[in-house]
Length: 201
Length: 201
DNA sequence: CCTACCGATCGGTAGG
DNA sequence: CCTACCGATCGGTAGG
Image (cartoon, rainbow over all chains, first blue to last red; front, side, top):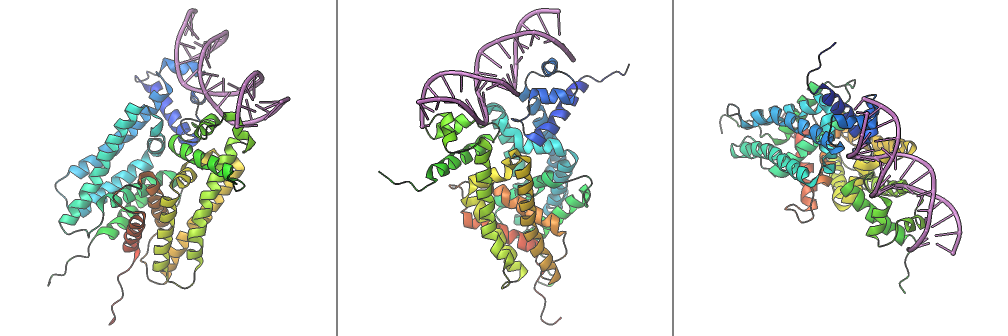
């Protein structure tokens, strides 16, 4: 008697697939595995999805969308300086990794199993996203808030550290998602920020 | 007429497999793919290896061994303080990632396809290795060289950043392997180190 | 190192 | 959402 919102079943499929792709990897997960998680037969899945790759694609764009929604506005914001902006971007990215852990892990590790076209699309989005981080680092160097670093290497180091959270974060671990986000922000801001200029110099 | 050292063929198999596992992933690489890279037939591979998983295992322990050889002695060393030690550990780890890029990438991403026993073994080694980094960070906090951080989170951040190098490093890129290693060391030492104490305080 | 071959499983379709 | 089924491919073995 419950009225399901359209696509509710599709969502369940994607969630089950996300968990399986993360645990076993895309290539090692069969369509029947996904179906079994939903207590239906393998071929029944094709009433809802066109192909196994389509399911992966949905998960990947879902995750990519969350990162962009969270970090994009901060990066575009004009009302805060580079250090605060980078701090908020780090916190935002970390928050997506911890709150959408499965999708994020699949996005990060399984996108190579997409078709060539879709892979190219992901590569473009990814580069644009990394450019947000490079940009704020460059900005901080221009304003003198950050000391001189290679902004590409530094952006990659930050993002690799944040993405690594997807590998080791446990909801029942000793640190909350907020603490993890804050401590990464502290760590990298400490690494980048120049000491506040002395008043008398 | 060339006399091949024993195991030379085995090495070639592991090298070819390492490249393929890295590109396509273990599960998506067939035994026939590996054989083809060596211009032999699929079943001929079994004259040299017992199973596909055995090849993965060889690559994984090869990579794990390199990390331990490079970083272990530094971590155990008694002749330098925590900051210099951490700097050398970061440089050592980064050097392995860049010099054994394929093996390192396979080690980092494909080890979950090992049997349960071997996976447990890798997990143990990995934890012991991470403990080397946690240890030197703890040491630096005790001596007052580092300010207070969560050593586990910080160790994971450092290792995730360094392991990420395997994803983006290109031999023909703008930065040499040494520059990448040094700049990661600079970045994280900057993040951790307290300013040198004033003489008059 | 080869050919011939094995049972199992894969993603996906037909036709309800 | 089901059963029945398809061709392709998988890791691996037999027997040279």
